[in-house]
Each structure stands twice: as structure tokens, then as C-alpha cells.
Image (tube, rainbow, N blue to C red; front, top):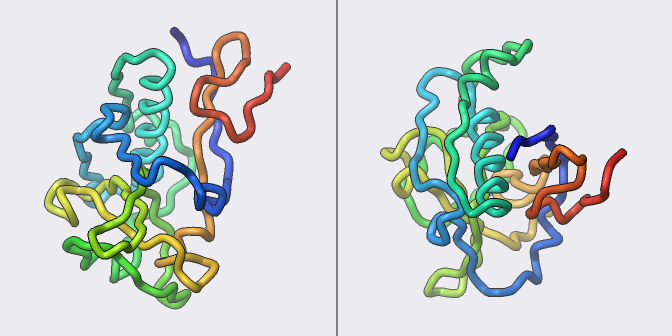
Length: 186
């Protein structure tokens, strides 16, 4: 099945506050690949997160895993944002649930792929995400960040700019997983 077009839309994560079940992990479910890519010195986190979301949507639609090219997105990009690294707190992360307050003076945009959510043994709720800094970073290339913090911007500003991918079939109808704005387009 060919994917006619994909686009990314900003969306708030607050809508997921009352989702059930109490835990979802798309890696454990086989929807998201457990393989963690490493962008090294190339500022390509946006491409890796985008490709990961399209691969997951394809699996949800077809039950077939695919591996798409991150490099193709990078090669087709006309912008150059250099190799700016994200926040120091994120770089130093070794494991556990991050609960850092947002610091605008230390803010740098970094894209990750949210792959689930859950609650630890102490009842702290978190988002689980896949990073693009290799398996040596964090928890085997994955991280957890606290949900429901007092700051409306979220821990590390996670709620400030969220995006998700919507893929269209050749007939321009939305693929499964694009439920938030799914309308048949003309």
C-alpha cells in the first residue's frame, strides 16, 4: 500500500490525561521498533521522530513492520539548523522519571517519539519516549518524563510544542491512528 501523503500537526498532549488502560507501551506491543537510531552530530532528531511515527502508523494499518529512510528526509530538507544540542538536563539523563522544570534560558528544541505512558511503583505517572541518541543514552535509548506537573508547560516544556503525524491513503482518507483530525480530504 502506498502512502499518498503525510503531514505533521501540532496537538496538545493534555487530551490523553484520562486515557485507559493505565499503561500503553507501543514498543512492547510491537507497533514501534525497539531499535534506537543514533543521530550522532547531525541534528536529525526531527527526521527520526517523524519516520518512527510513520512506521508505527503503517504497522497499525497493515500489521506489517517497515523501515523507512531517515536519510531521505534529511537529504530533501532545505533548511539548516546546525547541530544544536537540547537541554543539559536531557543530555545528562541516565534513567528514572525526569521531573525538571522548564528553563527558557536553557531551551533548545529536540524531537522525540512518545511511545507510551504508565505509572511507576510509587504512583508517579510518566510518558515513555524514544530518543535519537543511541542505546547508550538513558534507559537503552528510551526515557521517561513526568506527566501532570504543576507547570502547564510540562516537565522540560514537553507540552509547549507537540506534533503528530497523519498519513493519508491514496484515496485521501486517513490511516488508522490519525483519529484526532481524521476527515476525508478532497
